[in-house]
Image (cartoon, rainbow, N blue to C red; front, side, top):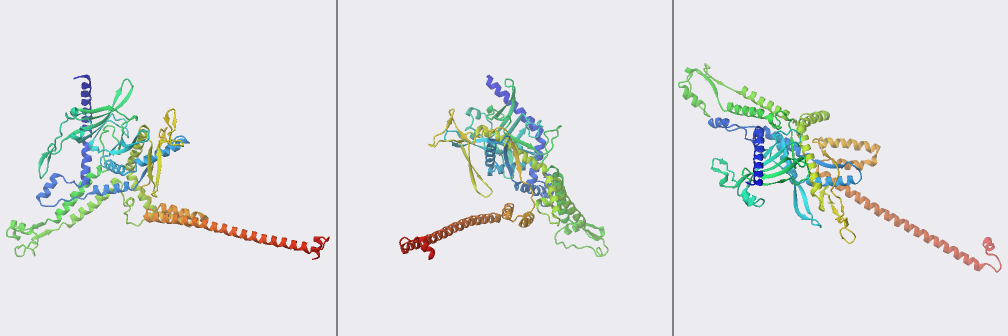
Amino acid sequence: MNDKQKKEFNLLQKLKLQVEEARFHSKKSKETAKKITNYIKGDQLPQEVKEILAGREQPEMWENIFKKIDAKISGLKITSRQEIQAYGRQKGTDRIQANLITNILKTTMDSTEWWANKKRADAALRTSAVSVVEVKVKNTGERDILGKKVKEIRYHHIPTSQCYIDPFAINPDYSDMRYFHRERLLDIEGLYKHFPKEKVDKLRAYTQEASSEYSNQSTSQYSKRALIYYSWFKEWDNRKKRDVIYYAVWSDEVILETKESPYHITRFPISIRRMDEIDHDEPWDTRGLYYNLLPIQDRINNCHLRAIHMMGTNKMLFESDAVDDAETFIEEYSQDSAVVEVKAGALSSNKIKDIKQYNEIASLRNEIADLRHQAEELVGLNNEILGSAVNRLSGAAIENRQNAGLVGLQDFIDTSAEQDKDLAEISLGLIQQYFTAEQVYKISDKKEADAYFIANEIERDANGAVVRVNGEPKRKNSLQIGRYDIILQQMPYSRGSTAERQKVWGEYIKALQVTHPHLVPEMIELSLQDTDSPIAMQVSQLIERDKQNQAQNAGQQQQLQMQKIQLEMQTMAAKLEEIMSKANLNKAKATEIAPAGEPTQQIQGNA
């Protein structure tokens, strides 16, 4: 074994120990998260309860409080939109570059892929209290006119169950973690495209016994897959006097690849956030948003099963001399539509008593209703924040109840928003490093108008030739930026109902009609923008077309007015010319009539 092989062997053992350490400490948290996920899916009854129900031929029954609450919170989260904006610390050109960065972040964080991964990350945050998203830089397959590759940024959610994180990291953003590992079952044949054949040949196919009511087989019989780890880890470099970040792709048998991180950022390209408060004695112990709902859900299911069992069973007390054969009486009476013979006088003497359990069933139903209310209060939901309240309250009371609902979910909301900001900060570093090619971006605004902008635009002269400075092409909208603050602007989760907001707008417009009537048209447009209705867009378009028609009509009227003025001026000029012509004619006639030697003025005066 040479030095290189020894080094790889030592590294492989080190990576294995890291995974085992993380697996040992995170086992309880992952099992709890898996249990919560199963509860959301509807797998809630223990095996022993299923066996009891099957023994008495009672159908399985559960009320999925987890699914109802999770669907409400998920819908509430999806309806809010988040926008990342970059602001420069200095004025001038920094502001232009900040706007450019903001637009690029919009293109990366406003796609179908982004929202799909964001939805999964939020779901993991609710169930396991930990959300993991990786930032990747990928080639688009395109090049600019100078041959530089055009890059794009992608975001991928990593399931918490596949992650092995340094269990002793205590920072809220996990910036102090020494390693991060992700495990996946990958097709062995597909690995030959990326790694040397002699290393892939050393992989062992993963085998796990899988049984069902139809067959018993192992994974290796129908799919040749290997358990592969994708890792990021830090090692201290004595020469550089700093931590150096490496990545590795490996399995239990061989290291397929390991290299120093190609990124210039001094952290892993992974954003991790946890929602619950950290326990410094056990920092690896995480509890999701629904952890405290587990005993409540179990009790609700138990109440439902007991109530159903009570409704389907009979309780009876009878004296021994009331029937001929007790066993035969019990068997016949327990059947549906039973007709059972008893001894004479048994019923009139109250020797047989049928005990009804209506009170117990009603008590169980009341307990279920109370448990439902407790579950929503634990999570922080109320009917007002969900828009499903039916009680008549004043506007101020409804607003207070909505705010109370938001406070209960604030930890989840803030943690999700913090991760968006963290992803934007990682993206900034990668944008400066990799986005060096000329690239065109398109953004569609809320009015469905497309706007285009070019990053790293290459300047050209009048003949179309590239302008160079010191041998390098001159660029506009360069992404080489200075220091920026990233500010996350988040729309409020509840802005009141549309009717309430329009009432407020109506009061504003009424007041302005008296004080500032010229502002009313602009206020109407603003009120339409605050209306969550597709008709509002059509009304805005009608107003815009009317403005254009008015402007066009005003131009035509102005043109007609000018033509009228010109015509009047021409008429007046013709009249003036006619008067001058008559005056000249009269003057000429007067000159001809005047006697010789007599002044013209005297003749005119006598006349």
